[in-house]
Image (cartoon, one colour):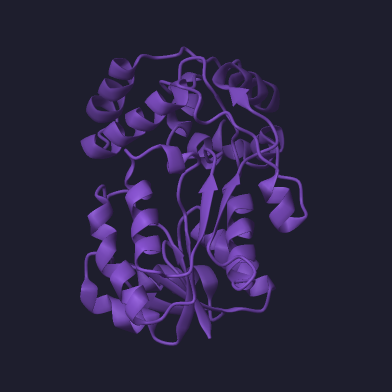
Length: 284
């Protein structure tokens, strides 16, 4: 049987596929752009047209599949948007779904991930929730513009700390859960990096790696919101969700460090210094 990977071309999905292929698994890569998936993975996977908002795409994606990596697309802000596909997984007797959730979500009912976890459990679908800390790719991706153009980290996180983890390490964790589905049935895993850093420390590391003087101006929520909506033109709902997450971060929800990545994989998580060095082109 095969494993369906939603969000296959994204930061995490591509690494889940990479690790599962190395374990000898057969993969169905799902997404709205099949040609892009074929270019990314050649003939190593089956690429299938899939859209959470198109229920007609569900059956074909789930045919011959017994495990699923489930990732909520950022533009689907309501937990209920995911329910039809979860219902379809139940109907197809999926033996394990690994849902990409959030660190600390078990104590935070506000983000949609909480209700999605609970809905999966309510339907009795065997699960292995994966709850990572903040992605290092947030800095090399959405927040890299200010780092490259203004030499600053423009994030409204105050003095808070986060136990950043590389998406590649998240991918390996998810692949491990899916590959050993019976072992990890009905479990949840909080995976983090090995250190908790504030954004002043992140700026210091990036300064050393790039040779530029990068600062953290600690912007307010209002300045951040105005910048990302009015100047950068990002979707208002997306920006509001990030503000909610950074609000929670200021309350200390993102600083916890766990050993679960090592317990799952037998490897130490990549440090932010290692990540920044490997992805230096994103910051200069």
